[in-house]
Length: 115
Length: 114
Image (cartoon, rainbow over all chains, first blue to last red; front, side):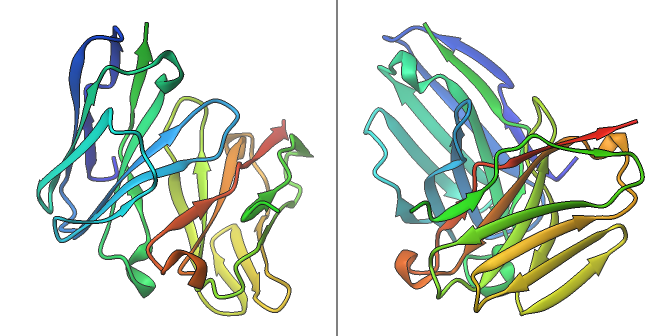
């Protein structure tokens, strides 16, 4: 248990559905991240939030929409996804985004399948 | 050239041996270096971080950093079957990324034979 929780753990959705992934961290961290992990590929950074402000959008398609209402909660809103978006979506948090505070702690992930 | 490069493996070692995992990175300005362990079907777990040249030891794990050669490694002593996992190298703080982005390697699969 890392102190980062994600719900749901598994999600199957059709291409026309709208769903949201939720992440919550109980570590008192200020930065939160969304990553995508596809089979046989490295972890891909999607979004970074530091003190609720988005500091990184790694050229992610607009069908993925992040929301960070406070430093403890992070959402990823999904709509009109494609089958190639099926992957493990990981949330992580860290104390900050500079120097020694970069150590990231990951949640258990949401396994997303788009049909 | 990949930004963070690792041999995908699998690296197979007998129980009790030393496992040596290697990683090279391309951004010479990188400042922070991490090793994560990921069991199949699970999320990555931070096991070591290193910020300055040399060795850093934590239990059976030793991280080694050589910034001049842009090389970071992880040694696992007295390898156990429970160490069988994919090990991810991550690099952060490079000039090319403005310091906000952590780049992960694709990982090396380690298999420890009992």
